Amino acid sequence: MTISIIGIGLIGGSLAITLKENGFADHIIGVDVRQENLDKAVRRRLIDEDMEMEEAIQQSDIIILSTPVDAMLKLLPQILDKVDQQVVIDVGSTKKLLTKAVKGHPKRGNYVSTHPMAGTEYSGPEAAIPKLFDHKYTVFCDVEDSDPKAVQLARDLYTSIPMHILELDTHSHDIHTAYVSHISHISSFALALTVLAKEKDEDRIFELASSGFSSTVRLAKSSPDMWIPIFRQNRDNVLDVLDEHINQLARFRSLLIKQDFDTFYKLIEESNQIRKILS
Ligand code: NAP
Image (cartoon, rainbow, N blue to C red; front, side, top):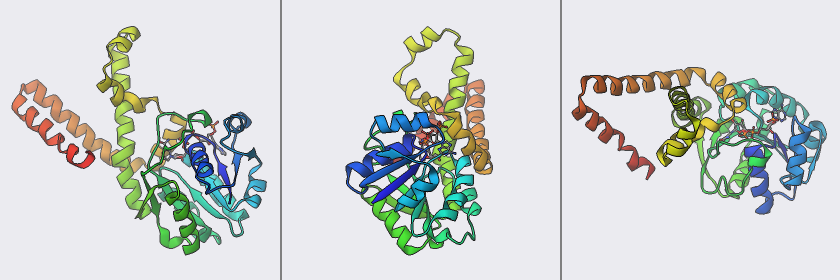
C-alpha cells in the first residue's frame, strides 16, 4: 500500500512512523509546503521520498491530509478533483466547514472525515513520535457520505495502529471537541499569560514551577499556526464553552471575595467527580 501524507508534521509524521512500522504501508510519500520539512522527514525516515502533490496523488492508494485546518479547506477539493480510486482521509481537529467545502463533490465518496484524538504540544516533523495513537480513539464523521469501501479502508488503517473508532456527525464532533480539547488550550494560554504578566522574574517561574503548574500550562506551548485556524472554524462552539468557563471562574472569584470557603470546598468536591470519568 502506498500512502501519501500531505503536511508532514506531528500528526502526519507520527502516522507515517506507525503505518510503516506495522506494515500497513509499504511506501510513504511526503508532500509539504516547505522543502525544509520534507528534508527533515527524509532524514528522520518518516517518509521514503517527497513529491509534488499531483504526482503523489497519482502514485498513492491512500492520501492522508494533515495540514492545519485552514489549508485543508483549499487542499481537499483540489485533491478530490484529481483522484480516481484513491481514498482521501483528513485528520483535522474541526470538521463542519471541511465537509461543507466538499459537499456534492463528484468524488465525495472517496473522502473519509476523521479525527485521531491524540497529540502533543509540539509541531513539525521533528515532533513526530511512534505510539502516539496507540489505543486512543479516532472519530469518524458523517460516514454515510463516504463510500462503504473507503470507510472500510480507513477503518483498516486506524485499527492497524491500533486505535478505537467512534462515529459522530460533524456538528456533534465540533461541539464535543470544543469541550474536551479547544477550551483547555485557551485556558492554558490564559494561565500562561497570567503568570507571565504577574511574575516578571523568569528564573523564579522556572525554579518554583511545580509539576501541577507545568502540566496545566503544558498546552500553552502549542503552535498558533495550528490553533488559530481551529478557533476560527469552531468559533461559535468555543465561545459557548468559554462563556461557561468564565462563569465558573467568576464563581470562584466571588467565593474568595466573600470568604465563603464552605461553598468553595463543595465546588472542589464537585469538580473531583472528573476522577470517575478520567480514572
Ligand atoms: P504540524 O505539526 O504543524 O504539521 C502540519 C504540517 O503541514 C507542517 O509541516 C506544515 O508546514 C505543513 N503545511 C502547512 N500548510 C501546508 C500546505 N498548504 N500544504 C502542505 N503542507 C502544509 O501540525 P499537526 O499538529 O501535525 O496538525 C496537523 C493536523 O492534525 C491539523 O489539522 C490539526 O488540527 C490536526 N490534529 C492535531 C492534533 C494535535 O494535537 N496537534 C491532534 C489531532 C489532530 P509549516 O509548519 O512549515 O507551515
